Length: 171
Image 1 (cartoon, rainbow, N blue to C red):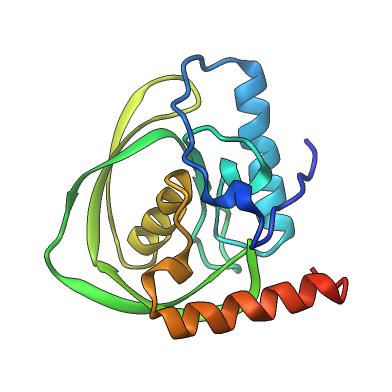
Image 2: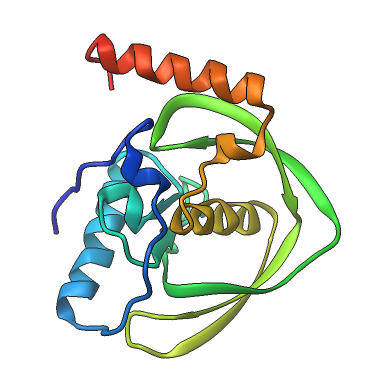
């Protein structure tokens, strides 16, 4: 396994739409493992392939508490089948927007269909932090960042901070 480089905003590749995965082979399984290693190494709970420069519809998530065994979920070509009308607001951050946080409102529960690393179709009913994390990561597949869900003022502040960090060699 290898750690991958996580792209940070305002990298234009983060705004591109990812294409579907056509073939599940060993190289894809290796990418999933590398994405998990990268996510864990960055103390994240989710990572989408576009965040590591791969424009494919792939995400990995693990919202298990730090003091429990890891419970990674690998999703290929995920799609939300159902989302609740109930909504909740949570503070979100992102490995591609380091040290930036904002409140985002999303559906509280979702049902997701995806392919696992063996190519089997799976469905998952998710709520709470898992539902939020899956929606956040799936946004990346469409070129959407969590700051796209907040006011233009708040988004502008966060993006200016990130540009300044890059200029100063901090990102």
